[in-house]
Image (tube, rainbow over all chains, first blue to last red; front, side):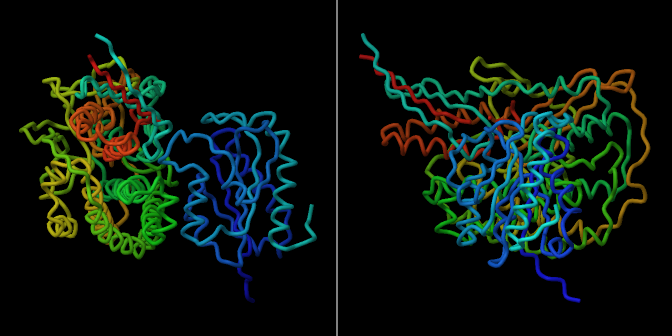
Length: 166
Length: 435
C-alpha cells in the first residue's frame, strides 16, 4: 500500500503552557480525530513553537501550508484568516525581539530563499492571556469551537477535499 | 554664548535583541557622552526565583532568553551542584557541553547570517539580503536549524529546554537518537567552515582599540561550562569568585545594571575574548580555521571582526558536537541523587555572548533566599559605550544615515541581548556647538 504524499503541511505554533498561546495546539488536537483517514493521510502536522523560515522553505510545489497560531491585536476569541501573501503585507508591529524574527521577516526570508511563498493560509484566534502557567481566557475558550470549524474547513479546502466530517 | 543642538533619531533599530536606545552627545566636535540607554522595565527574575527549589530555578531562569536559555540553565545547575557536592556522570558532563554546542550553533548562525551580515553587504535586513544572496541565507538558516534540532533532542524543545536537572537530566537521550543527528552535524561542520570564509570576506570598518578581555579559561578544552575567570591583564579567579574582581553599578540611563572591574573600568566578554585568550584550546579543526584566517590580531583589536570570531566558534561547536556524539554512551543514571544544604551557590559559564555569572543564597529549607544574575550584555554595556565614544568622531562628518548605520553596525558587533540584561534601540545624536 502506498501512502500518499502529504498535500497540506499544518504548522502549529504556540506553546501549551502560556495560556491562550496554546489555542492552536488544542484546536488541532480536537480537529484531527474528526477528520476522515483519507484526509489525515494527506496531512503533515509540524509543531513549531515559533514559526521559522525553514518550516516554509522546504514545502514542495505541490504542497500547501496552513499556519495556526494565536494572535494579538484583535478581539480575544475572534478568528482571523489570511493568505500567507496577505500576512507578509500586513501592518508591522515594531518587533520586541529581533532575535525572534517578526512574522513578516520569517515569511519574507522564506519567500526569497524558496523563490516564492507556498500556497497557504494563516488561521489565528485572538488571544488575551499569555502568562506562563496561566489557563486559557474565557473569550478564547468560547471562541474555540469557531476556530476548530475554521481549521477543519481550511484543511479541507487546502487538501482539495469538498466533503468533511464535522 | 549660545548652544545649537542637532539631533537625529533612528527608531526601531532592529537586529539586536531587546529594547534600548543610544544617546550620543557631541560637544564642539567631540563626543561628550555615549550612553546605551536600556529602558526596558526590569524583569525581576532574581526576585522570581526566591522561595523556589534549585530544580525550579533551572526552568525559570531559562525563560530569561529565547536565544541563550541553555546558558542560564548551565550557570545555575553548575552553581547548585558545586554547592551540594554533586558529581555527575561523565556522560552527563559531555551532554551538557553538547547542549551548549547546540545553543552556540543556533545563536551564532542567527547573528552572523541574519543579523550582522546584512550590515557588511549593504542590506537593511535579512529579507533583502536573501533576495540577492539566496544560498547564503539558506546556509545560515540550515545551520540554525541543525542547532535547534540538537537542542530539541537534548532539551525536549528547541526554545527554553526543560530536561536539565540538578544531578543530571530528566531523561538522557538514547544513543541511536543522538547518532541520528550525526549526518546533520557533519553538514553543520562543513557549513561552519564555509562561514569562516564568508566572514573573512566581509570588509570591516577601520577601527582599532585595546580592550580588556575577560573569559573563562580551561586548560584542556575550549571554555563552556568550566574553567577559571581570566583576563588579558593577568586575572585568574575561580568561577565562583566573579564578585572578587567585578561589581555591578547602577547608571541613571539604564534599567540594566552595568558591570565594571575593581578599577571601575569596562571590560569585554564574548567570542572575541574567548578566541584571543583561549585559542590554544580550540578544537583542531577550529584552530586550523583560525590559523588559516590570519585574523587573530584583528579579532582582538577591531570589534567589527567579532563576526570572524563567531564563525570560528561555529566550527568549534560543530566539531566538538560531532566528537561528543561519536563517543556518546548514555549515563548509567540519568540523574544522580543529591540533597540540598544551605550556603552560597555560584558559578560562571560561557554563554554565546560571554561570561554569565549566577550566585544564589540557598536557605536552610533548601530554597532560594536571594539571587544575583549577571548576564554578558550587562557586563559588556560599558565597553560598548567606550567603543562608541572612541569610534564616533570618525563618522560624525559623514551623512547622518551613513553615520547612524556605522554606529548601529558597531553595536550589533557585540550581539547585545538587551532582554537578558533587563529590549529596541533608538539612536539619538545631539550635536552641541558652543559659540
